[in-house]
Image 1: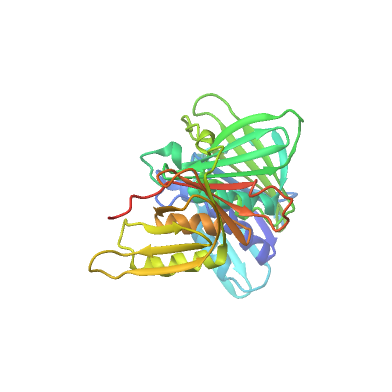
Image 2 (image 1 turned 135 degrees about the vertical axis):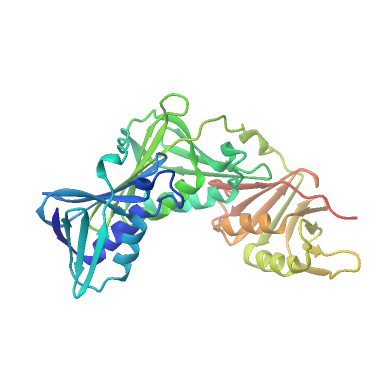
Length: 381
């Protein structure tokens, strides 16, 4: 194996492929990055039996070949190299890397011990990359992080015709984001439970190109795979991940059809107020929100400890209402909303709030593409 490649192209591709390497691999070879040199360029691959990543890039290949080296070490080296072409040569059981006057010698791992990477499923459709990354970032806000409840650490991706819905919940909050896309068949219908962390990292990393191809293979129980393909500097990038096994809760019915109290508030003003008042909220205590005639009053703290109170303008319709929320969960939902004005809709104080953005265009649907439902917290008397 012998090739020359541009430093920036190599560094970017290595960093992208190595991003999903396990911190503590079950076997040493899973810490490796597979470098395959072909007549038409390079392919860099990683795989941990759950998630695979492949990056193709242009290179001047003098001798085709394959080598398996430490992925994190190679990423660190490439990041530090001077802005000059990089030469890599396989010499016995070592890879020699030269860039300008910098020279590195890396021990290889046995390629024959490396697992075969899964094939990319058949393409299901395409979606604009920047819009997809933003939608995923909004949805994963509510995803669970408790590995004891693995189903809730995923995002349910529902495909129905030309629409995709992303749903995530950790039992205390629920996020729903809808967006349009271009399915390969008009009546496409599928659902998948994708690990939230993998989905978030992948969507964010594929924004260089204009669109992302989604490829879904449902398979049998525990066999499903979802793949994503996009363009990166110098070539194509593909990643696959195994779908989570289990039944995602039926959460759509949690969004109420009617609301008795609705408040519209300037989002930036509410965010700053929550941050200030929450400074005195003891751990696991709520920030109280009291909605009245034209005003929203926020309170936190109790007893002999520090207390805080602040009032901001609010357009309130319906009955006055007092409730309370985990301040961080409240901030997570507010910051995920794009619009400058946020709507908080209630059925009653003890029931969840539904938060959405109010579009600047009065004729548009109110917060139709992203909704965030948050359970209230018990207020201290």
